[in-house]
Length: 162
Image (cartoon, rainbow, N blue to C red; front, side):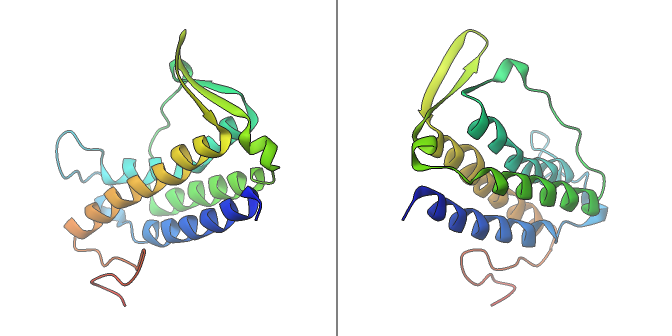
């Protein structure tokens, strides 16, 4: 099996699960935080919705410089959060039509003149898009649980839904 087919199957599964969780974001709790150092619920959901956009720099560019990164404003409604997610996940999925050689090409993360690391593009995609999504989705599931929002199944039945 080519890397493309394996990544597409994993990507589609994780993005479907992520959307089902984002659909549960309560409109009246977007400013809620579990701790003063935490992101607000709406900020976390917006960040999660934007992560697939990172695929473009990983798959199209040879490097990304953190010094050039700008922070996106959080969306102000569940509808906006879902629209951002739908657009970003569609855009990223379209970029996955690559050969194994393209996936093996190096990609680097920099901060100004400092090279932080270099990875094959497939590893960078899995780390910064898939794993990063899973990480923040876990955070969001805790936020939702703390607000008594029923959780959908993620990797099996949840305490709320079988």
